[in-house]
Amino acid sequence: MSKSKTDELVFLPLGGSNEIGMNLNAYGFGPANDRKWILVDVGVTFGDHTTPGVDVIVPDPTFLEGENILGIVLTHAHEDHIGALGWLWPRLKAPLYATPFTAYLIREKLRDAGLGDRVKIHEVPLGGTINLDPFHIEMVTITHSTAEPNGLAITTPLGLVLHTGDWKIDNDPVVGERTDIDTIRRLGDEGILAMVCDSTNVFVEGTAGSEGEVRDALAELIGSLSGRIAVGCFASNVARLDSVVRAAEAAGRRVALAGRSMHRITAAAKSVGMLSDIKPFLSEEEARRWPADQLLYLCTGSQGESRAALSRVAEGNHPFIKLGKGDHCIFSSRMIPGNELAIGRLQDALSERGVRIYTDRDHPGIHVSGHPCRDELRQMYQWARPQIAIPTHGMRRHIAEHALLAKEMQVPETVTPRNGDMVRLAPGPAAIIDEVPSGRLFVDGGMLVEEMGEALRERRHAASNGLILVSFALDRKGKLASSIDVRGIGLPGDEDQPLGDLLDELAERAEDAVRKLKGEALEDEMVIEQAVARTLKKASQGIWDRRPIVETIVLRV
Image (cartoon, rainbow, N blue to C red; front, side):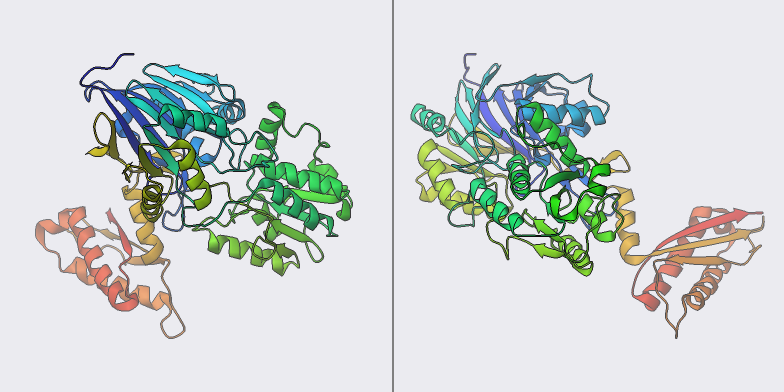
């Protein structure tokens, strides 16, 4: 495709900039009123204590709906890069492009969402190319903490962009190929206009470390233990799974899988030729009968997820895994920020059962990061030599620090976008030229809802302030025809002030509020409900220093 005077090349992050996770990046080409787009990754992040009842959060794609989207390219199979496809594909409706391992998992995910027959998935070989005129995309093999990770070399009439995806430099990745340094150097020689690059570990000096080192450390640790062993790690890290399985087999143990994602990932790995020369995994029934010293469980739930395998083991209600005194649990994973309390509770619960815990804090080497540290970032800039550095995949502090590092590496221009910032890459100097609608959608009760929707606001309010239910009957003249019943949910009482006595006091206040109403006010339920709510909230403020939700039911008799 030739270029015209009105053409622009723009980069637009809608997720993953100013946060770690929930990646959704868009590249646009053409005049402002007629751009063609490609999307890179459509991922999720996960809820926490601030989003009660919400486990999954996805980026808001509203700006892209109805746009000319030529395709969606998936760099790798982590949930923060593919997890939102089942929710957002119906809004984006573009063909998908991925290497075989990622494509396998995408099919499973879309099938779960009821979209399996509607979505066109193009499998791209490692190192393959995708032509979506005016975008020509080359898959660049890199290393990361999952199988078949890819950077993208995106060529357009206005320049070449290297989108690194998640990456690190690992000369012994255990599974898969090493980073394709020759291709990155070649691209640098040809001239890279901009590099959009991972910022996760920008504050960490040195290098992330190799999966080969983890393989050796796990083999040594597992070989030294007796009793049952459970290993918690990210199921998507096929190299780690491979290392654990081989360490178990070298120690005379057989492996049983625990957790749905473990079964799904190992099936995906075997479909592309990985994990091909290991012994079959034990079934649940076999694991129940297998000798303790000859058994290892490979488990999901290393982040303390309440419904994952390790949490069920810690609670004592897993269907086939029982751990106790003399047994061991190895956490071969990092502690994701925000999960500290959940992981601490999980490890405490396992310790209560007599299980000995091993982490990379007390056994260095049993985990390494999948993201580049500062020395690796410096090396990438030396290979790529971009004109423009655009840090992404990080909180604001990560992105700002990454920009400083890029300047130290003599990159002429840096841009530090937030989600929703549209960055013009060419022609002319790089700059943020627009801000488009962006945000988050919450998966709540199987539905996509606005981030600040009424249901979640009420749930948050009730979680911190409690709920009061009030019911009574009025006759046709507006006089009370029953006593007022007040019930409280999530409100405290003690020996000096039993909750029942406090609720009786509120019932008296509610009765006074109703009796003060006159005339037409007694004919309007909304006016009555508002009067009762104002009175009880004010009273609750005095009793509990809280303003609970007040729900009033008025019956007419």
